[in-house]
Length: 631
Image (cartoon, rainbow, N blue to C red):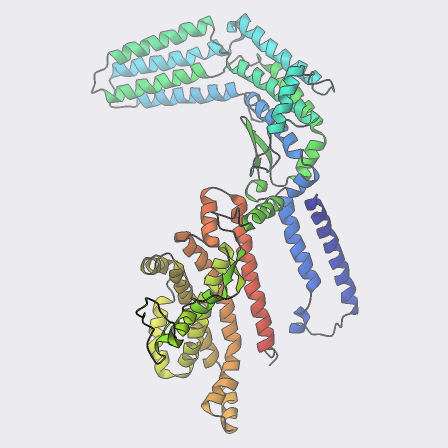
């Protein structure tokens, strides 16, 4: 129900945004020239259209719209897939979906193999003439054995009766299948068993990608019963072997000669053993194949074609649902199970994804007993103790208290300050974020912040000073081209799998980017602006603050946007390698257990966090450098 409403809201939002955009075009000024940045401003309604298009594509190609509008559609398609699977083995013998009869293809292939072996044996310099004669004789007899399977006069009456019986069963199924009375009513006991089994069956998507295999609707039950009948016919047919008396006489004679020849071979006659083994394989393939006279199965082929037409007509609305609501694939059957085959298999449904995400947010469930993001009440003293260094108490005059003769320790001012800086005092509690998302966010924020704090001053210094550029440039350029993942094993080995190693790795990534950005911005400042500031009597600090730094801001902020993306990519890879919390850790574990919904949740979360960072930077750019692009 929620998915239906959400789909309807998406359609309404798209239509409304397009109509609003059309009306806005009529009221806007159209005198702005091409290339004017003002033409690209605004357009929130197009943001809505783009977002809705993305969401609708996800709903449609994940088959969530099909699941919400027709919850039984997957189950019915499962029953149709059972019929198609049952028909596939029978169609395999006939030129229905193949170009020729299976018997024809087998005979053609084995005749080619016989001729190939004869030529190969005749031209072999390592075989004795006597051996060649024996091999060629066996191959000729094998070729003469094939007509005993394909001539109508050798087909035994019992085999004809079995084929006719199976053909009549298919014809009867073709007649009965379209009727409302099919399948016949079950006995009370069988119906009760079926109802009990359906109660235990979970719904579509309740266990990941699983499609409920037991028929839940009357239409589904019809196809299910037809599939059972076709499976029975198929099993009986493939047990038939056209091993008539004449064929058996030929085959027994050939196998006896092969056995006699093998017994007479010496241990060192490897080539002869290889050829006789290949000939025996060839005879076995013909023996196992279902080869019949050319017209013996015509009536059965026609009955299969007729039933295929009828069952496709009976699908009716099911086929329409399949075409319209299951793009790129359908429901397929394999043995006792049915599965999604298409984008619905690897693209989780939004309804399932958000349901699982809601469970992962709960502290009682989470992922590996840790919620994706939640909060915990933390005493303010712990926060104070984390930020204040302990040496503040050490530099105060006086000594720490010593216990008295009564065995008590009386606190003094110095010890009270130590309690404050170490967080050993009671205060009120405040909510503090926690969980996998928060851990990853904090690592990226700390690594990026450290890179900005140390990278920007050094970059500007290198852009303005010959010594700084010459001294630091080789050091920076030595490690900057190295991929972050190449540093990850070394850094994790040195700093461990805790937060320090990951933050330091992110610092290295953002540090080099910020140096390059700040250096490019500082060295690219227009000389005329610097001369103008000098002529007005500005000091070096004033020139740096009011001229060079503002002109470097566009490059610096662009560098920060690049560094954010690099930090997220590096962090996830680092959490893949070593970590017990974080988005990368969640994705790595989900990958091992093929939890596609969880993998997509991590991708979605990373995208949203990256978008949050980018939107924040856009706001900062608009506030700090409103002149950019207008000079």
